[in-house]
Amino acid sequence: MKNKILKAIEISKAMRPEYQTGRAFHTTFAMVKNKIVAIGVNDYNTCHPYHLFGHYIDHKNYTESYDACLHSEVLLLKKLLKIGIDKRVKIINVRIDNMGNANLASPCPNRLKLLNKNELKNIYFTINESKFGEIKL
Image (cartoon, rainbow, N blue to C red; front, side):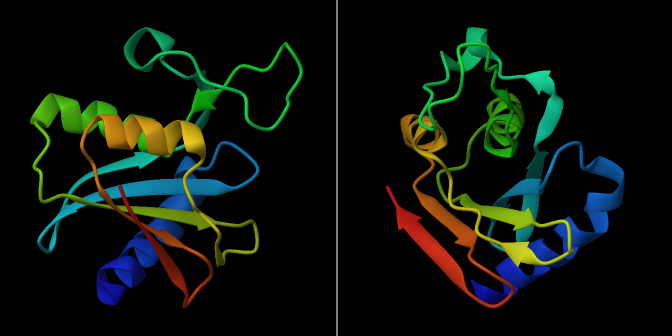
């Protein structure tokens, strides 16, 4: 799995200049065997699709005016629902900071709940350039 995560980091770094819309760049990959079947990126210019995935529960105590943006995991899930979710899929979450380094990308409780609800159980995420975490739901 390490090589797949390293490849996801490499791809994320290449995508960052064109797709970053916020303070950090997040990408989420869906992989089946050795093939990337979909990629989602955070989009701070687009709101969370409440009508599809329910209300975003504030876990960071934002102000009442906070509107959740479209997170990479949600965009990925939208794509997977269109093409069909393969139960063998592995999810890889990557965060690239503004210095161009991989950083902590553990999904928040909202997105973990959403991934679990859609039976996406194998989730990997970057901790830094060479360390990775794993969540089995």
